[in-house]
Amino acid sequence: MSQNILKKTIAFAAAAALTGISLTGCGSSSTASSAPAASVTSDAAGTEGRASGDASAVNTASAAAGAKTVVKAVTSGSPRPYVYVDDNNNPTGYDIEVLKKVFEQLPQYDLQIEVAQIDAVFSGVTSGQYQIAVNNFSYNDERAKSYLYSYPYDKISYEFVYRADADPITTWEDAAGKTTEAQTGFSIANAIEQWNAANPDKKINLNYTDADTLVTLQHIEDGTDEFTIMDTAMYNNYIKEYGLEDLKASPLSEEDAKQISSSTYAYFLFGLDNSQLRDDVDGVIKKLQADGTLTELGKQYQDRDDCAPEDDQYTSTLN
Figure 1 (tube, helix red, strand yellow):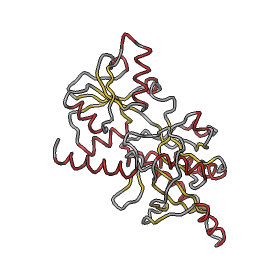
Figure 2 (cartoon, rainbow, N blue to C red):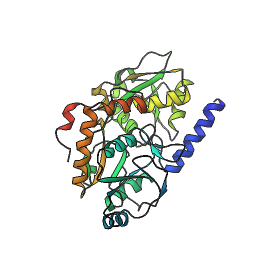
Figure 3 (cartoon, rainbow, N blue to C red):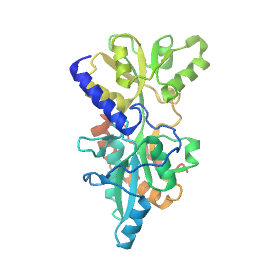
Figure 4 (cartoon, rainbow, N blue to C red):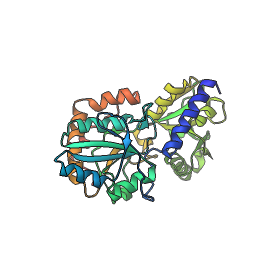
């Protein structure tokens, strides 16, 4: 491993330790388990971080002063490029910048953004300490019992990643008989397990690992593994950050991607008592899709021009 890659690996590991979740933990289905601690906040204009207190107390103080309604959003700060903490200790990334654009058009609210561990993201919204959770969350029925979903603001896609000098892998059948590694319990490992169960004569050789995504990609480069499957935006980010020139990728078709998740869109989550806030946010998300803002932010943060959901996704909410 080169010194440049080693330094960046250490930086990524430090960021993961700060936020308390894996870099590959996008849209975790964790449930509430602990009360969130005070953490760094940033308002919609990206002001310097400041210590936060109880959200209800802040809202009460704001109301008494006749000020804007304070809305607290919370994120785990990972995975990049959806959410991360920049060099000035401010939350940013595609998801965060979309949220900021939304609240630029909602002057009745004062948006503040905090970083907390992933379990505190869920418990904080459930308890009312936060009003919005921001972590590239996909939809699932169980989660919808506890949170309101916004309109989608991102369309997720996936890539088969393999050595540039190898035969292309473009379908699950192409991957049959080849070796990969994945983290136990995560969506990619689950998808491969389901494929193997349904196709015993076309099994993929799956090795379980706790290794960081960068290590997995390096294992493909050195021949330890033959391929992996990655979220497109995350793949683009790793290629840009680490210059992995020996790798190539092919997109999964929408049908093949459904093997990984039945939901290929990302949403903001709200507490069940925040329907008015959800409706206000939805109205602006629809505008940002229509005027091309989502596409432009996708180009900037994901190196993609196809992340904006289709028009028919803005006719009704999921719950």
